[in-house]
Length: 217
Image (cartoon, rainbow, N blue to C red; front, side, top):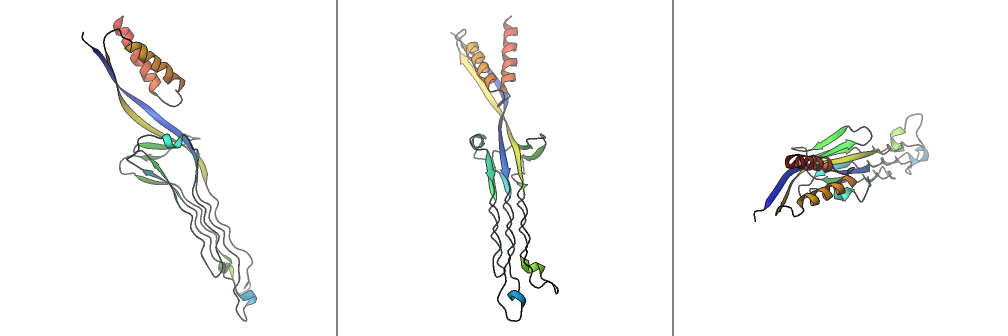
């Protein structure tokens, strides 16, 4: 008996919504060195370290956004406070988030595209870390030789983004006539309807099913 096959190319969207946060800048430090004939020894508070950036990087070894469905919050490391003897605080480590090629990064509130990770755009800094604050060594003047204040580091930036990856799937059903291929497809459509908020394939499957019914009639 001759078999009957049905094939379609279906485009659906893989989506994930996450919260990303850059690193806060480290605070400047207030301290004084011991030095003869200098008020309070003279200021020597170091600057705070820079906060880490949030960077998206294309990884051609992955093809889904599954990793971002089970964890929603991602934060870069904050910069450390400056130290004595003009010691600079350690910079916070950057947060690198790997995504498949072709991923769109959108602002969740406005829907505006922030970055398109396609083509040559394989690395994109989405959020910059805060700058470190200056230590009290920077505020010494002829009239204020022992400043007892330092600059705080810049605040971190936090936003919610939606990741979207459009995928084209080649779908096919092969079998003898009247063995349940249409039933299987209709049940798949029903299941897809339950997850319509995660994929666009529901509408495509419905259109294909209706088209097949019209041909039979």
